[in-house]
Image 1 (cartoon, rainbow, N blue to C red):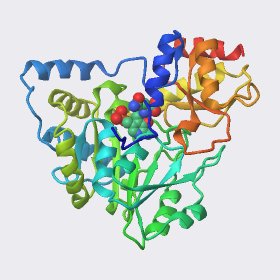
Image 2: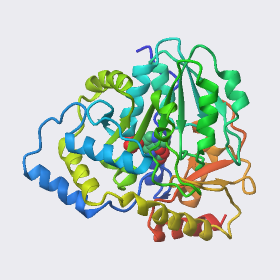
Image 3: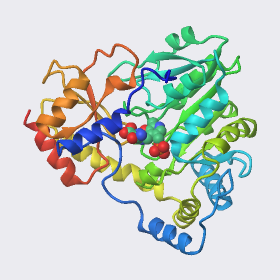
Length: 379
Ligand code: PMP
Ligand code: GLN
C-alpha cells in the first residue's frame, strides 16, 4: 500500500537487540535492565490475578492507582493532580506520548522538538499531519539554544516536546530551562509535552525538575511517566500522564480507542507497591549512580571518551579516537566484531549528524558491565 510513513523502518532498538542476539553480543543497546523489579510487585500481580481481577479496568485507570499517583505527585512535585480528571493510566509512556500528540496536533500544526530526540515522537506527529521542526542540541553540553528556539517558534507552533532526564544525551533540564521555555511560548497557545520517564533516575545536583513544578507551564503541559523505568519492569508496559482536565479529556478520547484500558492486575499491583513503599524511587539515583560509575571506571583504560551523565541509565561514548566509521556502521561493527551492542546517536536526529557518539545502557548487573567494558578496552 501507499505508506503513511514511507521513510520509517523497524526501530533501532529492535534492530540492535536482534543483531546482538544473532552475534551473541553483550546487549547494551536497547534500554532495559537485566535484573528484576521488586518481588512484592510480582507477588501482588499474581495475587490480584488469583483474586479474579482479570476483566477490563476503568478506561482512565483503576482508582487506587490514580489515587496513589496523585499522592506520589504531591510528594515529588508539591502538586496534587485531580484523581478523576487529570491522571490517565496508559500502556507505557509510549501510549501516553502517542495519545497526547494525536490528541493535540492538527493537520498543518507545527511541533518543535530537540534533537537528538526519542524515536517515537516524529511518527506520531507525522500521522497527525503535523510538521516537526527540530532544534539540534550540540555536544558536549546539549543545552537548548533559546535563540534558535525563538526563531523556529511561529503562530503555528501547537506543541513543544521535551524530555528530561534526556534519552539519549543523559542531560537534564533545570528550572531555568522551563522558565526560558515559558518566556518564549507564554504569549501563544502552545502546549508542552514533557517526557519524564527517567524522572527518578537523576544524578544532577538539585535533582529532576518536572513541568508539574512550573505553575504556568503545567497549565499547558502533559507530564509523562513510566513505571517500567521506576520498577525495573519495562515489559509491564504501564505508564501514565498528568495534564489539566481539559487536555486530559482530549487525550482520553484517543486513549479509549487506542487501548481503551491498561491491564488490570498490573495496575492493582502497582497501586499496592506505591502504598507499601511510597518512597522506593528515592533509592534509584544511588542504585544507578553505582552502575554508571562502575562502567565509567571500567572504561578508563579504553580509547573511548566518556561524556557526562546527569540522568537516565544511558552513557554516551565518543569513538572518534578509534574509528572514522559513521555511527550506524560503527555500532554494527562493534556488535559483530567486538561483541558489544550499542545505539548510534544519529538515529535520534533528522539528517546530518556529524558526531561520533554511541549510547550504552548501564541498567545491567556488574558482571555484564565488566565483561562489556573488557571488550571495549581491547579496541
Ligand atoms: N520516552 C523515553 C525517552 C524512553 O526512553 C522510553 C523507553 N525507554 C519511553 C518514552 C517509553 O516508555 P515505555 O516503555 O513506558 O513505553
Ligand atoms: N526506550 C528504550 C530505549 O531507549 C527502548 C524502548 C523500545 O525498545 N521501544 O532504549
